[in-house]
Length: 153
Image (cartoon, rainbow, N blue to C red):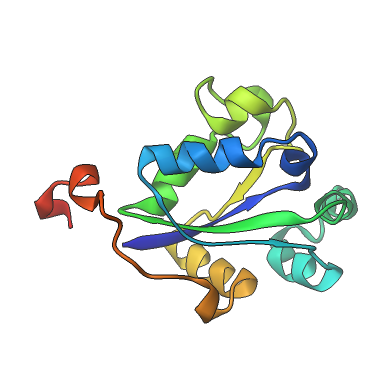
């Protein structure tokens, strides 16, 4: 099973949407393998968003991500990265399709509810950045046979 990172951003916590967003992933059939609330720091954000460090909005992005704690989630499922990204929708909420998380809950490019890993390789790197190995749990959900066909497992 593939694992991926989802960060519920400060805007999500401020708006009281955390439970609703997690519920959407769980209803889809993704397994919550780890979850914790944490206050992000300059160091972790410099590493996490290193690819954006030269962008003019980098400082505002970091300030926004440090304005309240975030909730870091490890979600697991077959093709979890692709599934989570499809559920999240376009990065800019104004361009996200209705029915996606961003399409239903945001109008912003930056205050866009969730961060999601963009590839299985980055998911592995990002999960190590936000979770210790003992904070990610491996168990078989009792409804697994009702989520996937046996030949998919």
